[in-house]
Length: 277
Ligand SMILES: Cc1ncc(C[n+]2csc(CCOP(=O)(O)OP(=O)(O)O)c2C)c(N)n1
Image 1: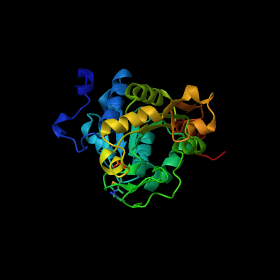
Image 2 (image 1 turned 60 degrees about the vertical axis):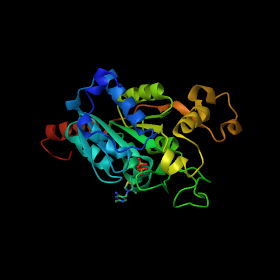
Image 3 (image 1 turned 180 degrees about the vertical axis):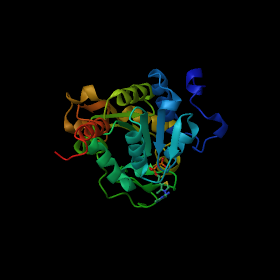
Image 4 (image 1 turned 45 degrees about the horizontal axis):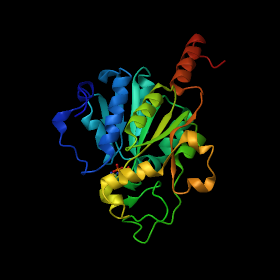
C-alpha cells in the first residue's frame, strides 16, 4: 500500500485502473506521487496533463487539477495552462507514441521554448493501448503488430532529441529503479524550464510477449541488467554500451524560461503604453 500522504493524491473511486497485470505504468505513477509529496506540492496547485494511451489514463487516478486531452496534443494544453497561470506546477505525462509520433512536433517546440513544464515519458517501446504497433522509440529488430518480421526503422534517441530541441533538464529512469525515478522527477520539477524524464517501463502484454521477454518480473530484471548509471559511462567504451541504456541525470543547463520572458515582455509593453519602440 502507498503511504498515507501518497494515498491522499489518489482518486481511488476510479479504481480498478485499466492497466494490465505486470504493467509498469503504476510504478511510475507512484514515483510521480512520491515526488509530489517530497516537494510538498498541493493538489490544487498541481496540474497533470496527458494525451491518449494507457499511460495517459493516469491523470484520471490522481487527485489534482487534471486534464486528459487528445492524442499527442497534451503539451499544447499544458502550454496554455502554464501561460495562463505560471505559478502552477505543470506536469505532462505521455506515452512514447503519444510524445514522439503524433506529438513529436509539440514536444520539440515546447522544449525549444523552454516552458517550465515537467514531462514524464512512459516509454514502454510500443503503442500499448491500441495493441502493440511500433512507435518511434521501438528498438530496431523488435517485433510489433505492425512489424511482424522485425522492425527496420531506427528509433529516436529521445534524450539527444530533447537536448537538441532545447530542454534544460533531461534524465532517464526505469520502473525497476523506482527510487531513482522519484529523485529524477523531483529534480525535473525543481528545475525551472522544460524537463524531460524518459521513464522506461514494461509492457508485458503488447511488447514483452511478442519479443519473448518473459514475465513482467523478467522484464524488470532486463531493465536492471541493461541500465548503466550515468556516472559509469565516462569509463566505458562505446561497444560496452551496445544494447544498454544510460540512467540518471543526463543533462542540465539554464536558459530563459518562456513564461518569465512573456511576463517581462508584457511589463515592457505596458511601460511603453503599448508603443513598439
Ligand atoms: C488522433 C488519434 N490517432 C490515433 C488514436 C489511437 N490511439 C489511441 S492510444 C494510441 C497509442 C498509445 O501509445 P503510447 O502513446 O505509446 O501509450 P501507451 O498506451 O503505450 O501507454 C493510439 C495510436 C487516437 N486516439 N487519436
